[in-house]
Each structure stands twice: as C-alpha cells, then as structure tokens.
Amino acid sequence: SRDFRVVVLGSAGVGKSALVQRWVRGNFREAYLPTIEDTYRQALGCSHKAGALHITDTTGGRRYRGLQRLAIARGHAFILVYSVTKKQTLEELKPLFELIRQLKGNNPQKCPIILVGNKCDESPREVSEKEGAAYASEWNCAFLETSAKMNINVQELFQMLINFEKKPAAAA
Ligand code: GDP
Ligand code: MG
Image 1: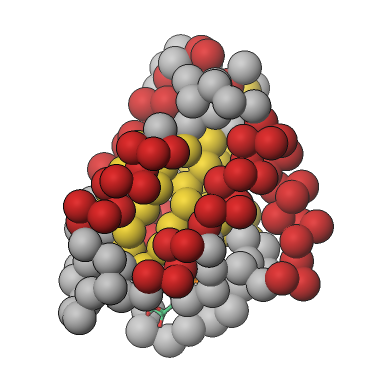
Image 2 (image 1 turned 45 degrees about the horizontal axis):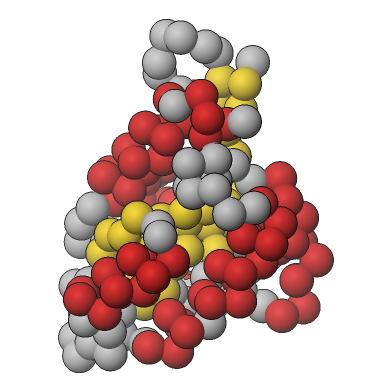
C-alpha cells in the first residue's frame, strides 16, 4: 500500500484541529483543546492503488519543534494555516515555510504546500484575502480561505490534497 502523509502546521488557535475535525468527522467544536500531535487515517477511495491519506495535526508550541521537524521530514504535502483575524499567525508561518523548503527541497510539484487563511467567517479581519493570496504567490503555493466553523472550502482543501496524491510526482 502507498500512504500519502499530509502535515497541518500553524500557530496555536488558528483552527488546525477544527479543519481536520470538520473534514474527518463533519463537526465543529467551540471549545479549544490543545493538541500535541494527532494523526488521522482516511482510506482513499480511488481504485488505482490501495493507500491512505494520513493527516498529522501538529502543535504550534515551541516546545515541540522536534516533533514538528520530524513530521515535516516525513510529510508529502503541507497545509500551512493562519487565522485571518490575526496577522501575526500569518507571519509566524514564514519560518515553517522555510523549514519545509530546507527539508524537502524547492520543487512545488514534488512537495505541495497549501496556504490556508482560516476563520474567514469572523470579523474584524487583520488579513485580507488579497494579502493572503500575495503571500501564496510569493511562496509559489496554493491558497484558500476557509471556515471550519461554517464549513467553507474544507472539502475543497482536502480535495486539492487528494488531487496532488493522484499525481505520481507528488508522492515521490
Ligand atoms: P489549533 O490550535 O490550530 O488546532 O486550533 P483549534 O482547531 O483548536 O481552534 C482554536 C479555536 O478557534 C477554537 O475555539 C475553535 O472553535 C475556533 N475556530 C476554529 N476554526 C474556526 C473557524 O473557522 N471560525 C471560527 N469563528 N472559529 C474557529
Ligand atoms: Mg490543535
């Protein structure tokens, strides 16, 4: 079997776990439950090869840099999440982006990254959609705004990953 490992990264509180929960279980919790690291496995329903989508939901904490680095080293694709209500969480993605490039190389085809502005249902905003898109084009990666709460673009996000998985280069 061939597994495709997706790693979800970003600062604490941006909604990483909420996005994964929304997709895996179809629900949303208002309560904040700090994560250390959780993994989820979804069988991929495509016929060409048996395999699963592994999702690693990481923590933003500095104490867990080692875990984060290991998850990146093992990952095939990355979701970088910030909150549109907090500009700082977008800036905090920069060192993570650089670490991914350092550990995985510079080829976006081989190592897809999706930049995600979550909490697009909330206001006031500190990051406009245009500004998020500008970061994504600077980093040469895909971009989506999502809401785990209102279930906006969550299917689209994970569908994008599944599409990457189907291209053999992505899993090399
Ligand atoms: P994590 O630390 O990145 O895993 O963040 P969580 O998924 O635990 O979410 C942190 C807080 O933000 C929780 O109180 C969630 O209910 C809330 N939250 C997550 N996603 C959204 C969203 O799309 N919209 C809104 N309004 N709140 C959200
Ligand atoms: Mg979490």
